[in-house]
Amino acid sequence: MTTAILDRLLNDHQNLKRVLTVLEREIAKYDTENSDDDDTPDLSLIMDIMEYMHSYPEFFHHPLEEVAFDYLEAQKLAAPSKTSVIRSDHDQLEREGDELRSLIRKINFGQPVPLDQLHRAFEDYAWHMREHMRKEEDLVFPLFERLDEASNQAILDNIQHRHDPLFDEYKQEQYDTLLERLEQLA
Image (tube, rainbow, N blue to C red; front, side, top):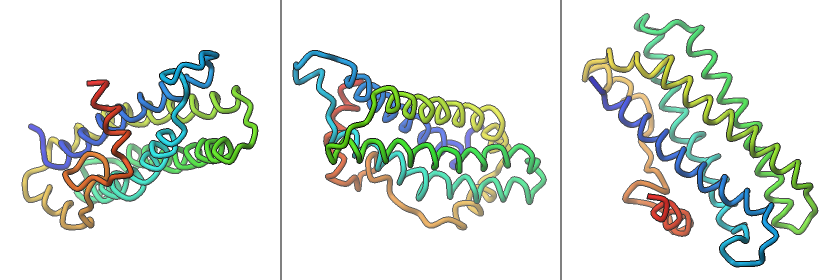
């Protein structure tokens, strides 16, 4: 049985994976020598993606997980050892995302950034992001299937509801290009 919490978190993961795929394709364009517009990295798009990949997890996704993990632990449905691994990943992903965003900002301001440094920072970030989502889906998300509607509501009542600035009906214009690129992938 799926629950409102589980549905929302899984949907977030699907969306984050899609956005990460677009970022991966844009970063890979830095290796192309072709001057064709389709092979030129869209720096504005990359910056929007990095802003989204920073903001959405920090202000939307991870706060929901934190409240849900606290609830699972309080109800003795999850051992803190399981959730602590996930919680520490959040900090590592933030640091790696900050490093990648810093490199992207340097590129935006015309500062030289060695390609191997950019690719290494992206690969570390992308690998950890995908591994983190896999761990959550394998270790913790199945525990949400045990929650009844009252438990789901208790968790939801303890978070501030915010709209996804990319995928909700209240999306921000800032992400229009990213949304178009995601629709091209579908």
